[in-house]
Image (tube, rainbow, N blue to C red; front, side):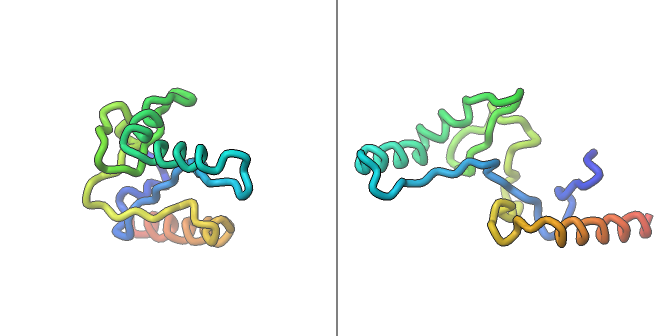
Length: 113
């Protein structure tokens, strides 16, 4: 078990796209082609393709809930009914207060044992 296992927190676990950001570039040479690609990429078919890609021994998990997850490792799957926080929000990128809060939580957990 991970020492910092958020799966048991009543507030919910975290979910990150792990850098899975896509955007349209302003004044691109082929804006319509870019829109077609983004639409496909975010579609059911596109997200199935994303989940089939392997990177360092793992497969990414699409945030879509309407596609099968059998190819995604159990530790990377979202659990139905659980609330998740988007860990990639810019306002959450200042990590010092988060680490301090996590340390305080872990101290309290150890104290109660």
